[in-house]
Length: 151
Image 1 (tube, helix red, strand yellow):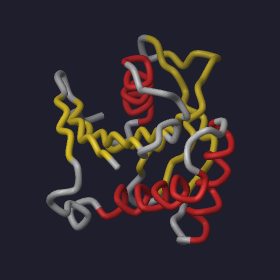
Image 2 (tube, one colour):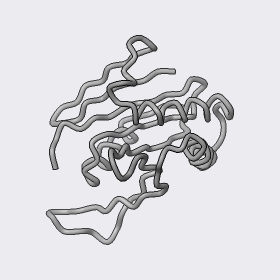
Image 3 (tube, helix red, strand yellow):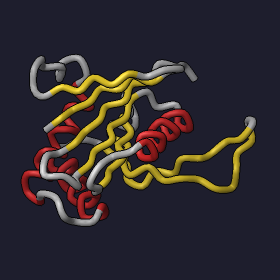
């Protein structure tokens, strides 16, 4: 499994790691969600549609007693005015105390569009952390985003 940490502010940087230092103690919520994703990927492997992984993640999070909300509406604002359209984030884990936005994909690779989507969701919600998890490859791909701005 590969994990990327992405610090989001005016600029962001990516750090790709493969194993190495255990950062789970510094951010136990995101690493708990990553653990659930690893279990789902181990059981299902790649090849299914995104909605299959979504439902499997909901089951796994429930079994691990990780609180979450599914298909969370993300309102869109333009010049401080709420627009009638909105997006839906796949999951928000730990929604009441320390929320982690989780966007799931089942693609061959992740591109700038998927990364921009996560960054826009963070800006729209004010949530400080996100995971972009891709089940579409033989090795689980996960990118962790941490905001550098205050809302």
